[in-house]
Length: 270
Image (cartoon, rainbow, N blue to C red; front, side, top):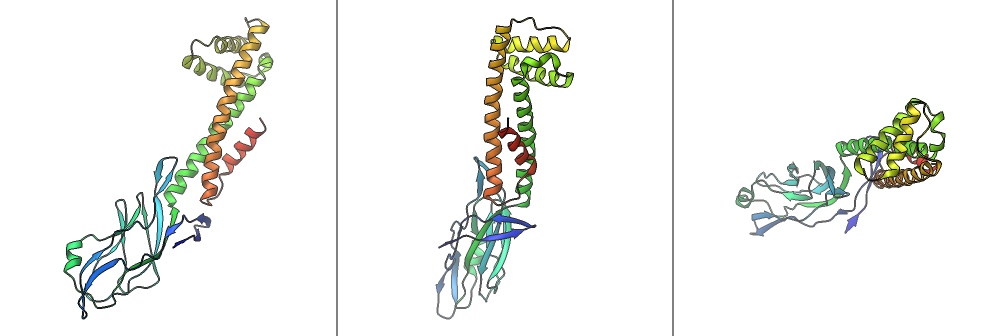
C-alpha cells in the first residue's frame, strides 16, 4: 500500500513523495512460545532518495512506526546514507525524522547483539508511512539556484533586446555598449571564425569611440541577424533551465522564487 501525505513545514506547503507503507513486522524471530529469540531486522527499501536532474539531494524522512515490544532493550531504527535515527521500544503511532542523501532502510547497528537477545511474545516492529520531503538545506540550495538562474536569465533577456536594437548603436550609452561588447568578445573567443561576430564587435567598438561603423549596411545587417539568432537561442535555453527550476519548486510545493518568476515573465515579453 502506498499513501500520499501533505504536510506543512516551516510555514511552507510541501509535497510528500509516494511512500512505502504498512511494511508488516520487520522483526523476524524464532517463536519459542514463551519468548522470541534469534531476531533479525528485515531489510526493505522504505523510501526512495530525492534525485533531480540526476543530482541527489538531501531528503527529510518522516517515519511513522509501531514498536510494541518488551524484553531486552535493543537499538533498531532507520538509516539514509550515513544518517540514522532509532525507534523507541514500546512506542505506537510514533514518528521519527531523519535527514539523508540515500534511500531509507531499516537499520540495526549490531545484528549479532540483536540475535542474542530475548523478547516477550507479541513483540513487533512495523513502519506505517514514510513521508519524503526536501530537507531545509535542500530547499535553501534550490532557492539559491533559482536566484542565480534569475540573474542569468535577466542578463540573457537584456542582451537579446540589445542585439535586436543594433541599428541604434550610435544612440546607446556606454553601459549598454560595454555590456554587448563583453558578450561579443566571448562569442568571438568561442567562435573566432565567425566573421559576423567580429563585424558586430567592431561596430560596437566604433560606437564606443563615437565613430561610425566601418562595415557596410549589408554587412552590418547580416552580422546583426546572426547575433540576434545566437542570443535568441541562448535565451531559449535559459528559459528552459529556468522553467525546470520553477517546476521543481512547484512539484514539491515549495514557495515560488519571485525573482525567477519575474525573470521568466520578462523573457516571455522579449
